[in-house]
Image (tube, rainbow, N blue to C red; front, top):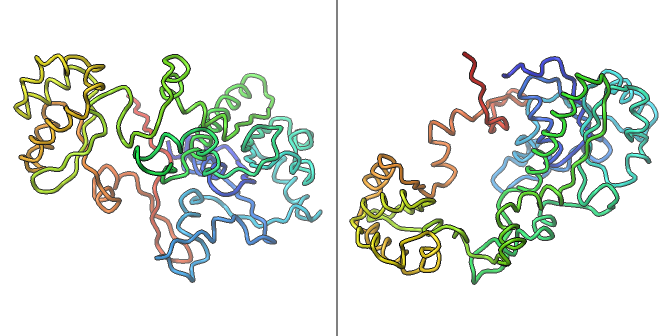
Length: 358
């Protein structure tokens, strides 16, 4: 799969996270991806987004490398006629262009789809915006998490609203745009014509509210912040501490899993208690259920509990910091290594799927 798109040429005229996450996806699958950055502004703004422990002398931040590995970097100021013509030359041979302009900026810069399709009728022009094609609002992931309802349902009941610790709306929009591009590529095989596909961060966010949205739209339940708890399932998301001070959580999504957990913890009496006889009843009485389960979890060492849960197909997770995550063999298999000015660096692959052929 690493060379699946080896015949594709992708131009990335986008910055920050959403657009570049699409570019790195195609790069990891073998496409030639040329990322265009503006020398007048110092390039992609994320080059300077360094956390406090990073080497101050590095030209690029770790954030930048999260979505920009494997690309050819080309500095062009397309407000200058000479560089604009260089860009047009690239477009004539390109399959895909990725952009994230605000409304009107593409016209000012002479890089709108209506202009570029005259140079290349098979070009797939893929654009990301904040609040739709007609909006001029500047959009950052934080703003979308606020505007699309995520922050008010994230966090503990007694805490202030909390954003998610990664720019998830950007990534969701990136996934939406990948899907749109793949459909456009399929259609181009049939029609031999390109098209303009567009995704907004807001639409991507709203589409991703899934069950929280239908809990309101169908069930009349207005979601609120309940920490890691699930509004439809219990026990799910409660945090338990083992005898040796490891923190774990369970995702009990069926009566079968609840039965297995009760048997493992020697809580068989809960199986005949009306308060816990159905998932809906367990949701209603989740605080009492938590206390009963917690007493038994605190008697067990983590390794014993974890191994027994895996053996009995009980969904359990240990709360791990990133050091612990990347000690797992599954996480190690997701790493990619690259060199910048002779220095080895490591990032995470954006492509997580595998294709198995007979």
